[in-house]
Length: 255
Image 1 (tube, rainbow, N blue to C red):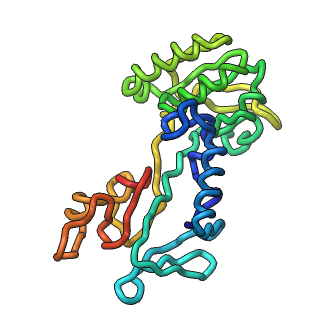
Image 2 (cartoon, rainbow, N blue to C red; image 1 turned 45 degrees about the vertical axis):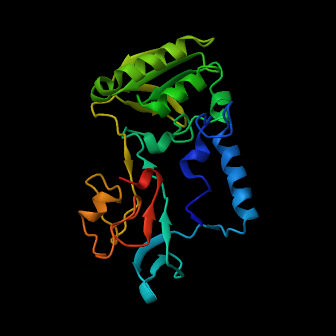
């Protein structure tokens, strides 16, 4: 099991996961991934951190080889690619300068405490943005959600539902139809304005030359793999199998 920066990926940054079997009252992403790591180690799984896979190639005797960025490689008959996806950051002036100094990409418990008594803006209109707004509103003085006009039309029911949930908390919050913000200030974020570009949302995968992908970069599998390069004539690809027999995908990396 190879992980890029920490076990659990994006799940590890979630403030509350409420749809995972066995945790009826929810569990934080940090705690869930910690428990999952301990369980994997109990069954003798070897966790290899900070070894980035850079290429998939054909290995000996029909196996697949995974080349790592430190010159090592792994060989296996079956490979499961579950790299997830990486959220795009907001395309706004000053975003790099103020990241970690007023601009954050996750809403953790620490973030909520940091925002106590402050006015907070959540950029986005999807499920994650809604959860972040509800979570932060318990500590912040006010929370505003900003999203692009296109996202607003597409996600209006979800946004309205989120706004209602936020307003039911102890601190007033509101939802605005808007575009993403730019930042001004010296060493910390001090003001936000309206930008002229649309919000940067969606996901992108880590590419591999061996695996076929759709236009958005997500890996094809199952019936889609059969139509885009599957060459194993003795059987059809399995549901999560890619165009390369023995290589499977699961999670957000899958088309």
